[in-house]
Length: 133
Image 1 (cartoon, helix red, strand yellow):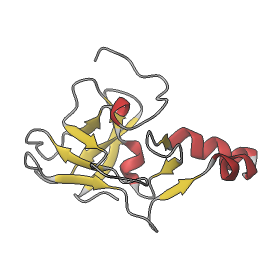
Image 2 (tube, rainbow, N blue to C red; image 1 turned 120 degrees about the vertical axis):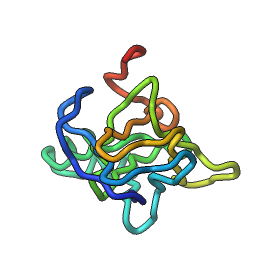
Image 3 (cartoon, rainbow, N blue to C red; image 1 turned 135 degrees about the horizontal axis):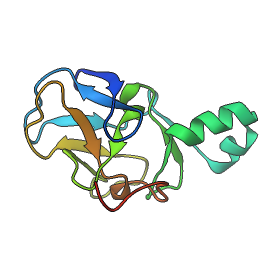
């Protein structure tokens, strides 16, 4: 669940991206997994979806390093793009047993800047992730 104001807009990285609509301070929480709002789907649940629904989920979900669940953000944070020099760091909290994930700004992010993270921090199998930006 996004915890700051964002919009979706053109990205210099890939298609659309999350754009900060407010100034975000270093250390400020930007996103967290919220059970009941964000979805965590097992492989069996993914396999039971219609082809179109499965394609949509696989396009926007990440695979949790901790549980192997497919996690689908229910808000526009699903448009956050990957960067090897991100302005947001996502961490699996110590002692986590589920799909807990919390993302914090690693530097000040001015309104209008695209919000990025490094998918490799939390996604078991990120596709199309480049080592260079």
